[in-house]
Length: 382
Image 1 (tube, rainbow, N blue to C red):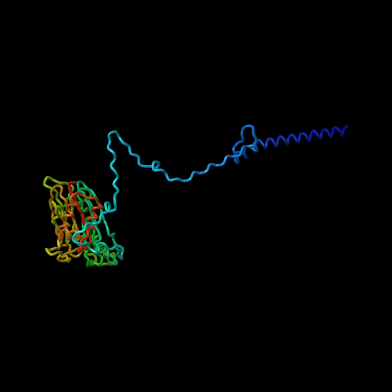
Image 2 (image 1 turned 90 degrees about the horizontal axis):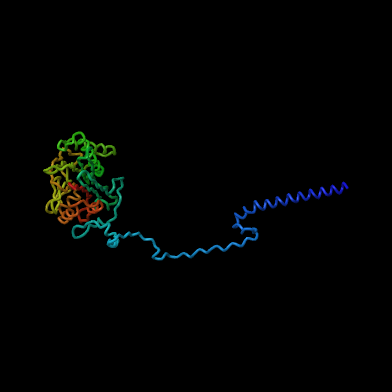
């Protein structure tokens, strides 16, 4: 009897364990089954089992790449208004239209102008410089370019022309300087750049103390310019003879009175100032070195820093709308010796051109004119 009860208890215990295990397997299937389904396959249909889920449909094939049809290519949107005319066709600009060749004067171009630009041996100022500015009713264009005869040598000669632009502290006066280094000086490029910058700086400070160009002392100013030139030369182990240059400086008033506009000038050597009169440029200040048969001599009678006491000074009065230009001999000689060039620049610079066009004109080509070129042009009352 006791053995029967023991067997019955054992059977009951084994049945309970089996039930517990069955319940655990069912719970594991319920919890883990959906998680596995989420990672590996879509959820089965309602009431089904993952093992009996229908097979996945094949993935769609990528369509072959095709060139877009003309009607599908994106184009700029044009908004038409009622009564508006159709847009004008777009003109395709050519290189010749946007970057024209510099003007050529004379029967044949020069060989040097077509040669590649080479580099100077010592570190030097750039071969090209250009600026535009506006101060009051004055419009300014400025450019300086290494001459064809200098840039094709091996090694190239550094640009010996320089210019500087400035203003007084109040902004009433425009200050312009153009300098040209002497080819006989080994570092005349340094002398020209120093002279132009120093002249503008010294005059600006002088006008800050007393805003009256008529009171400017050109002798004191030029002596101070010479001091800066010789100091810069000494700092580089050079002498005054190594940095010689000629210089012209102008102070242009932004105010024009009933009788015109006064402008102050001082200069030494063969740099010059010109006024546009009708269809020609005419010089009024500076030293010109030409005669009827051509350029007489490249020699100059005075220069900085050797002869500051030989400078000249003038105050000129110009009518409303006058156009003035300060130039080195690379431009002034062309205007003096070639009527074709003078007339061309008179037409091109009757109004302020774009800066690129102004620089392009400075790069003119003419046989026998191989020097550096610099011009600063001021249009008044514009």
